[in-house]
Image (cartoon, rainbow, N blue to C red):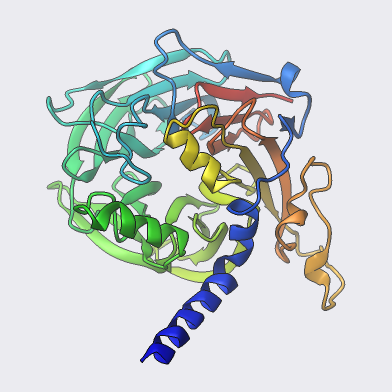
Amino acid sequence: MLSRVLAVLAVLLATFIYRSGNIAKHGIFTLPALPPSYYANGDVQTHCTLLQEPAHTINYCEDMTFWDHLDADGTVAARFIIAGCDPNRKAWNTVMGPLRNPEPKAYLWLVDTVDNSLQRIELAGYPEGHSFHSLGIEVTPSQDGASSILYVVNHAREETTIEHFIISPDTPTQALWQRTLSSPWFVSPNALAITNETSFYVSNDHLMTRRLPFPLAPALPLIESIAGLPLGWLAHVTVNPDGTITHELAALGVAFANGVAISPDGTTLALSSTSLGQVYFYDRDTTTNALKYREAVSLPFFTDNIMFDEEGALIVTGHPHFPSLTAVAANKTDARAPSWAVSLTPFSNNTHFAKSARAADRKYDLRAPLSASEAVPASEGWELETLFQSDGSVFGTSCTTLRDSRTGSIYMIGLYEEGLMVCKP
């Protein structure tokens, strides 16, 4: 009997090392030698600005998205950012814990990309007593002054839901609540990617969540995260006219399914696997929303939120050192957690590399103080370039980065960081 148990443990250990050994080595057992700060397009001190406000409610932001205002021809006339920030995250976090107190609520902020001005978005008509803790955020573009649909993942007190709002360019600081979307399938909704005004993809990061009773939580969710158990999934949800939903599974077996994004032409979907430090790419049927797995790309950090820019590059943000992140979340004295954001640009059909047994050893990302090639092999289909790095002393706990292809500017928020950072070339 003992020999069988040992054999099973040996198989489990070998599987863990094969799937998670590299990210565990570089992201758990080793503190990466990151610089205080690095920005790919200039000196951080002169090119980057931290946006804050006196009440400190634009802190601990988890996700943000561009809100484009299009003219009659479909051209971007104005671009804003909607960001979800939760200063109470250290008291209420259904992903990392704890679950002490869901009050006060989180905030939505509107950022003007022209002058960096900040305005808080009022949640008009939001039900009294319904707690609000935003995670994934997605909004449709405004077409020639028309209203947009805004969906927000809400890790509320009783359950995790998706809140449905309408927001108009005429009153951009007011999101009019429409309904709360709830389903038994919403076990652990995290990130969103809209397919049209009434449908979206949503990732579920865990099967075993912090909402389980003690002692199942926090033990089981932590085991699922660290062991990289493939229990997360991606679903496609359609909102019916009567407010009910149609739920379809799109991708199964993803360890800590997190950020999700759709390419500008709609034919590629990217999904972040946080526990494995990878991004999965799928071919997407634009008619049926069905997905077909294509490839995976490894990153030098625990991947969090992702976005495609207008040029088709995927912007990936994550956490280079998991123990440091948990120390910050736990309010450990003098704790700080590093930041890292990169771009993945697809190689053109004319790009070829010599086929050899050591092709994956190709050095890349050589401008960065700490090259990603020191931690993960080169990808055959994507060129990786570091956009921003920090050991946490300048900007920490990075979780989302947006890049505006029109200006080259990047916008970064941190899970437990104060303010929103803007870096312009």
